[in-house]
Image (cartoon, rainbow, N blue to C red; front, side, top):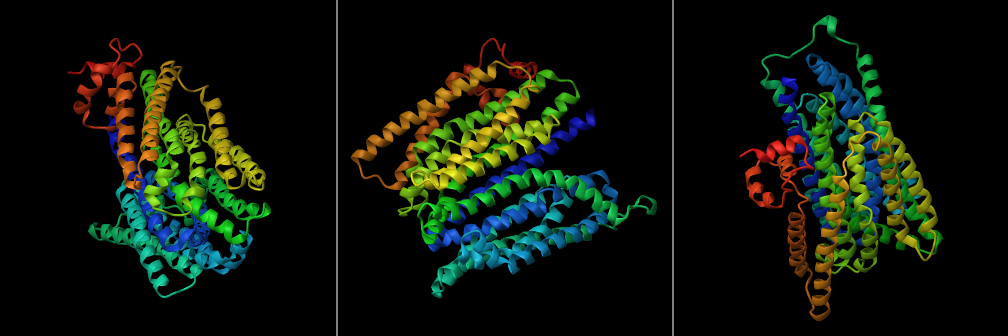
Length: 551
């Protein structure tokens, strides 16, 4: 048990590092789309994002499960890591060549089938990225199997920065040359291929440097070596369930794009108008909405090994503490974000994208999308918990059911003239709500009973509604009397955060044990949280009470 306990902080710090890099990638992606929107406009972003959804689908299909499976194989047989990597690299490269080649050859057919023929040039521009990302995935799986998360985190950040700089530079150069809009969008999409190439080059150079530092190669003895076909068979067996679970969501996103581009034309929109509307929605609303679920991943992922360990050692109090912390921190972040995103969609978009004409059209869509923030964040946590309770098939089933309902509802709503594009965020709410209900219906048989979770949820909801409502009333009063610039919204955001934080501390929802789990600076929070911690501590588990008694 001692070794296991000593190993957990290293694992948790690695997961936190990956989660932090994922959050930085999300922010960088949003920062990329703001100037790209100004360069390409809504129509150009429609071409760009259509090709991007095809790339994401091929990327997930090729790399969602294989790097994880490769890391499992290497962690099981580290002495054979080079042999396993060589066997897997051929599979990764073959998938990259196949996916990239098919995208290049059938770009015109794919773009036409999706209802956006001018996007074919963008699809050809992102085709090389499929190859580079598959090669990079092999090396990421290799390092993850060795327990080193830093190369993966650094490569993800380099990839995002490469997309940002190269994409903007190439798009700006194409625009200065007076090229047509589809060609300018394709130049911007080439930044995606450049970023993935930069990521692969970093990983390859890191691997070469690590190999040179070794005194001699570490090879397994002849009797321990397994044939390459056995390695590949084991690799595929491990990867398929993970790929299917992730691929359902990605395929739904791709089909969602097809539905938007085609079904809106059924209710009277022209092809050009649909492309502009889709480009504005996918560039302005979706990246803002997806920021918080990415942050919740940083909260949920480190808790999974904690739940597993607590169950293995029979620590019921520790299990209750971890489960309570997961739900409480998720609600602390998601409950205020949902009404804030719905209430302040217009000033948020104006602050980020300036005076775009499409802000007026996208703001109502972002308001509707804000209602999905809470169930989407909770789905992240419940899915992670189901993995910890060894029910990995439940997230796949719930995703299939939710995705089916999403596609059916989007198919119906998009063709209704009174609903139109609003059918997309409405269908997203139906999807996430369904997935959450299925996950919770299964989890209630495994989660430890805890009435305190319900009381905390009501307190957090009250604090969120009071802080957002007060800020909204003040903002509307000032905006009706003064011509406020977009930057004036920043003090309103700060006021809302400070008011919410004060209410949370006053209601005693945020506990010292929560902060201690994710922060090493416990003493800085102790003086702040102690006056609002329940005096009796009756609702706290043994570990938390012991921690609070520590001088």
